[in-house]
Each structure stands twice: as structure tokens, then as C-alpha cells.
Amino acid sequence: MPATADTSAPLDRFSLPDAGGHFGPYGGVFVPETLMTALEELGAAYKAAKKDPGFQAELRHHLKEFAGRPTELYFAERLTQHCGGAKIYLKREDLLHTGAHKINNALGQALLARRMGKQRVIAETGAGQHGVATAAVCAKFGFECVIYMGAVDMERQALNVFRMRLMGAEVRGVEAGQKTLKEAINEAMRDWVTNVRGTHYILGSALGAHPYPMMVRDFHRVIGAETKEQLRAREGRLPDEIVACVGGGSNAMGIFFEFLEEPGVRLVGVEAGGRSITRGDHAARFEGGKLGVLQGCKTYILQNDDGQIELTHSVSAGLDYAAIGPEHALYRDRQRITYAYACDDEVLESFQLCSRLEGIIPALESTHALVHGLKRAKAMRPDQILVINLSGRGDKDVNQVAKMLGVTLG
Image (cartoon, rainbow, N blue to C red; front, side):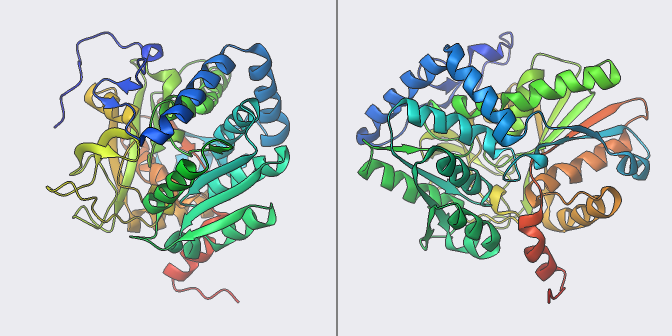
């Protein structure tokens, strides 16, 4: 157990991170010297934009007109009846343009890139949703766009690869290592080092070197702010529990942040349990992970005793990653956010259940939250309220699921 953060100090979400990008003992800046100037430029640009009413107004405009905010808070009546416990609400980020929460951050960073005078944008992607969102905003604002994606992920997310290319992005497959998200981030960082003056890197999760974890979290805070307002309007109170899937942790921190100082609201992040909780078969960083540094920040990482990054596995490409966002590590230490995991077979079952009962096909990533949320709902009282962040839609996963279920699509 970590127990390295100060758990006695009062919780003040707005004090984090500190000036050096630290969330307690986590976070920071661990990058080549050639990127320090770019990160300092980005940090200064974001600090100014955050205080600029014009920037914030333009972002709100694009979130509404282009992305489709606010998203609905949907009462899942049949899932509620099926579980026989708490009322289940789904925060419908799957209804956003491009199909997931990723567009919130992509829009914000695209506006920053334009503010800094950049002409070229790069990004990494696992499940493809961040890549699609980045390709969409680059098409909208006229940026040259290059997306890095592991070859394995390109195969299981072929539809999203085609969507990115339709919108004018160049998708570069990565053949190194496991050919998944970690390797895609490595290649994107190499590109950025080489082309740092004219290129902005739209990192897709609450990971990496400062200011990315803070910035990505802030661009997704709209999820939790809407949820709080909508539930007060619907139920006249806050929820008893909120559940979200956690890869790097952007959708989860986005919905959790507004509730961190609400002690009556239980917050649960759900990692990828993969085939089983044995080494190499999962991507649950709090189940056997160790403190280390990966791709820009200090956090919990699946690594061996020699510091080598372990193989990971998840049925969902977006959760198939060896590290977790540093802010999550802190709040786990503080016991403010609880972490669980869902295994592949449970995910496939809940994927079908939600589709059948609600007519909503969830992303495999989001289905991890559904797995745990449905378990929790069954254990709760009917007068309690559970919110599940449905961070993306599952159109991208249908071919993969059909293959796993032995169904041939003619």
C-alpha cells in the first residue's frame, strides 16, 4: 500500500497540482530537456487562457455547437429494474460528436494550439476515440494532423482508423513492443521532440508531464459540473455514488472533480482486470503496480522489480495501458476515491445486457464502469442513486465483440 501522501491535511481540490505539477508525491515533469521549453510555453498559454473570458466563452461555444453539450443524464429504468436496487443514471458522454468524452479535451487543446500559433497537431490513441476527436478538431480549425496508434489497436479499431483518415488525418501505425497505447505515446513524444517548434501534442488523458494532467482534467470538468446540476434538477439532491472507468483517467477525473469535496458521494474508478489479475493478463495498476516514472510523470505503473514495464491486457484498447494518472494515485492514497476492476468476461456480458435492456451500446471501456456499477446498484437501497459515466459509445467495438462471440458479420 502506498500511504505516501499526507492524508491528514484538509482536502482542497483547487490547490492541486502545485507549481511543479505535483499531486502530493505524484506527477511532476520527467521529459527530455528538448521538451522543457515547449511544456513551459504550454503551461504559460494555458494559465493565461484559463483566466481569459474570451477563450472560455469560445470553448463553451464550440462545446455546445460542435460537440453537442450538455449531454443528457439518463435514467436507466430497465437496468434499475434488473438490478432491483439503487436508481441508475447514465451520464451520456456517448452522445457527443465523435462518440466519446474525448472531444472536450481535444477542443480545448486545439484552441490553445491556435492561440500559440501552432500549425501542426499530433496525438496518440488507443481505442481510437481520442484520435477521432483530434482529427475532427484539426479538420475544423485547419491543422495538419498526425495520429500515432499501435498496430494491434489499429486492427481491433479499424473503423476508427478509417474515420480519422476520412477527416484528413495521417494515421501512423506503431510496430514496436506490444503495439498498443504505450508505444503510440512513445512515438508521439519522439515526433514532438523532433518538431517541437511548430507542433502541438494533444495528449489524450490525464497523464504525462505537467501541465497535461491538470489541463486535461480541467477540460473534462464540465462532465461533473453538468451531472451535479442535472441531478439536483431531477432528484433535488446529489448522488450516493458515482462510477467511472479508469485508463489514464480523464473521463473519471472529469466527473469526479466536482464531487471531491462532497463527502456523502462515494467515488469509484474501475480499471481493466483483463483475463485475470495475474502478471501480463490485466491493466489494473492498483493491483500489483509500483511507484515509478513513465512517459513524463511519476505514478503507479505495472512494472517488474527491475523497472521494466510489464505486458498489459484488456479487451478494451483504451484501458490497455501500464500507468494511471497521478491525480488518481493521490486520491487513492487519500482514500477519497476507491478503485475496483472488471474482467473481460464480465465486460462482454454487461456490454450485451446494456444493449439489450436500454438500447444503448456502450464502449468496451465504459462497460467496465457498468460492470461494477450494476454490482453496486444491486447492493444499494431503492432510495439511493448511482451515476455511471457512460464515457463513450460502442459502435467502434461491434466488430470486435462479434468476433469474440463467434458471430460472423455478412
